[in-house]
Amino acid sequence: MSRLRPDRPSFVYVLCFDEPRCVTDGDVGGPVLHYVGVTRQDRPVNRAVKNHKARMLDLVYLAPGDERAEDDLKLNGRCPRCAGSLWYYLGDSSPSGRLQRDRASATPRQS
Ligand SMILES: [Zn+2]
Image (cartoon, rainbow, N blue to C red):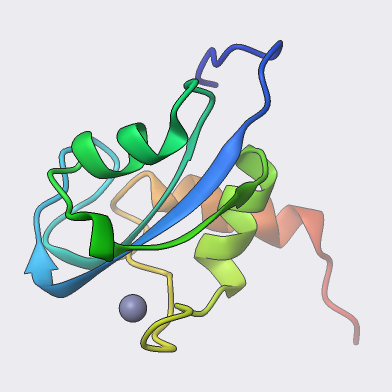
């Protein structure tokens, strides 16, 4: 788990790019159209934009939320701008496999 500062409010943000790009983040397997992140920095907009070399207009969503909200957005969310899926991982070979497994164990299927 990442050690974010629990004493600060956290924000979840969504970036939507015009064309796929490589985001400066180790958990992404390749160029992506969307990026979902969480930050506890004082200026969440700065973190969201500058950290990923994005433009202000790439930032399409910013709201209070924690890592759980971030994961939920990645798994279930739609981009507020283009309505595209916010799931941008390639498959189980990436750390997303962990996310998928977590989700599978958290929401047992009804039969
Ligand atoms: Zn989008």
